[in-house]
Amino acid sequence: MRGATLSGTGSYVPEQVITNRDLERIVDTTDEWIVSHTGMRERRIAAPEQASSDLGTEAARAALADAGLEPDDLGLIICATISPDTLIPGAGSLIQANLGASRCGAFDLASGCTGFIYGLGMAAGYVRAGYCEHALVVATETLTRLTNWTDRSTCVLFGDGAGAAVVSGIEGEGGLLALELISMGEAGDLLKVPGGGSRRPLTPELLAQRADRIVMNGPELFKLAVRLVPEVAERLVARVGLQMDDIDVLIMHQANQRILDAAAKRLDIPDERVVSIVEKYGNTSAASMPLALDIVNRQGRLRPGDNVLLVGFGAGFTLGGALIRWTQPPRVPGH
Ligand code: ACO
Image 1: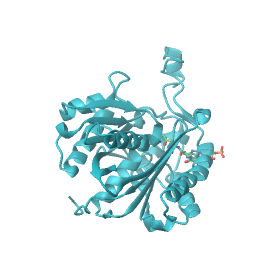
Image 2: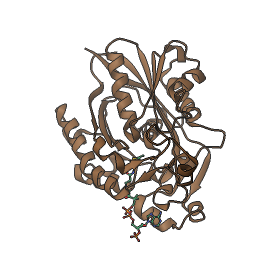
Image 3: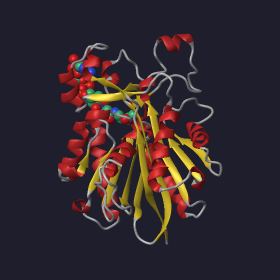
Image 4: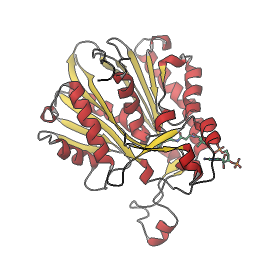
């Protein structure tokens, strides 16, 4: 049966760094609190002239180069984002135009931080069905533009960045082995931007209340993530007849080091197999997993036959995981 594999990865982060010390000057917080509660030390912020599609275009170009493909080889671009440049047109179409990809469809996918997993599932299905040979999943976020910079419980968490992967058809073994997508819309209020949509179009009053910015119930999300992320991981591993010990690399949504530690402990996966980029990049929403994936790929840590498990959670509330048997040769570190 025709399969779908990841044939290239790429990422991009803006140059400007915001450290915990910088945040101490903006809100009533301390480096000690942020590090001990989240594991974060710094995050990136997009330049004023950069929007999500600009970051995504860079990540997409890097993923295409890694796959050895040209933009015209793509049949589909899926852009996972909750911070598109504009509602209309979508960021996926802007990235398509920036790349100069002339023979492909493009759309945006808004499943919060789980968006990359949703995109992988859609791309793999499209490729497997034979509609195209190569699809691009690009997750790009400028959540600092949706951040309430007077709310210390959220503004210390988010950073900007983008990650991308090319999904290509293969014959035979490997690639995407299992996928699980879950939506729990009943818990949607845990993370939301209350204004600016068709329910509450923005007015000067709503803008004054910062209704266009993220509101989050962190402790409840924390509890959900620690309980549900390991459950998804266990189901995916069992579905393909593997043991947790067979997982070579675990990449979870990078929301908080304490969530990564608690989930890894529950799964009994040793630290060296768990990828964390929280310290350097904070929470980059949908971009966090493909950014982490590209970083370990560029370090040469992924080898053919490796079982790579991705599990994410985020706004919606959404949840999802993908189990991938790596098929590409290891990258030479530094290239
Ligand atoms: N600096 C100093 N003190 C702070 C800060 C801060 N930046 N933020 C909150 N506090 C205070 C609170 O006011 C509270 O004080 P109080 O006890 O006097 O009321 C105290 O610290 C404890 O606050 P909690 O909210 O209970 O802190 P907690 O340990 O739960 O950490 C955090 C908060 C980091 C948000 C954590 O709950 C978390 O990471 N949750 C998960 C969030 C998440 O996953 N979000 C992403 C999901 S989707 C997406 O990624 C887009």
